[in-house]
Length: 561
Image (tube, rainbow, N blue to C red; front, top):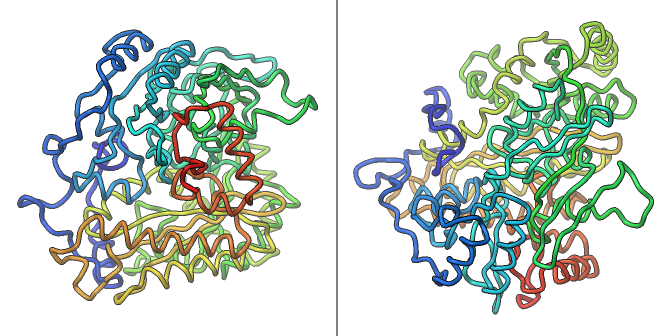
């Protein structure tokens, strides 16, 4: 993965001129100041990492635990590539050469037993451990925030060596996967046996199975396949206090389900070393299509009807008016609708994308039944074009984000969820907070939203915001020499805090699928209340008495309060 951005460097592309012009004209975005005669990220070889704080004895013990010195890396490039995640603040900092919180070493265990041994070494030496899969966290999940008295040194526990499809049970339709298995390879190995996991989040190209479980990931086909936590039937977890082996049956009444305790724990309770998942036969075919609705409210009502009464497609999503106009539903055509090519985004109004799977006959029957519902609620069919364009470019948005940063724009996403009755209030509250806080003295930001996951009782809202870095718009501050990555990050953090307040105030959850990390930690505590926070902290203390597991992520250390 590109160390200063997203994904495959070969797929990086400059911003289309139509989008660059839109940014200049509407948002006042100007190119970032030059650094050493060039624009863009600092050169990798120019970045200096802090000296490793690990003692020689600790490094030797880690090498023994992980199967050799080659599996404990302290070189600058390895440490830089494991610094933070892939949120926009993370990228702005690292592009500016800020690696102050780089791990002191990268450790690569090759088995469950080696993970247990590494945790034992780290507990004895009081070294924090941050599990690292694909490095795609966007909520500060890879940046520990230890409190006073907690371990200062930390290692990134890279699980890439644990990347096997261990077994497939075709009768039960389950598979056992190791945590470092990246999603594309997992899907490839399963399809060789006639099965699919059906989990395709936007991070699909780089995220890992362990990360999916640790963050309660939700894929773009969640309407048909469910969230990742719905797919998990078993887990093996290594902790400093021993191991957990969870999941004797698909469902059980034998007390609280401890699998749910581990799912979403983000490495704060232990390191997931294997995951047993439900799998399904590969569908014979698939088809995508687009629908137009006159308003976001009308489209939301239509999605609710399908979610509650069916038929439910595998993919079901709805862009609001702004996202539809800009063309973000088809990232390859972003900006074309605003500059006069409305056909690129498929429609004005609001664009809904539906995806169906099964035999051709099953797909035709479901499309006809869903179409009758959508027509009855004001929908207009647009044919396969918009849906196929979305399917073709559905993993492209993070690459577009890199190009926006290169052009001097600030682009970030956030998400939440609520019950259907609360969607209008939550949608309005988040938009208002973003516009208010990011406008500053200049041009208001561009705020877009789509419904990305639906349930009978509610849905998630996924927001994308684009503004001038620092929020100063056309006032000239964005491109001034005094501006720094720290300025842009501070400006965003202020807005993000306001949005988090707005989400809780409107009755939403602080995260539907990105997780808690450190960015949402304090609002998660407010969401579950004081007693709930004490319960989470008590569980962590029992599994991690020395506070070495991703400290400050999910729950604040007791010493901070």
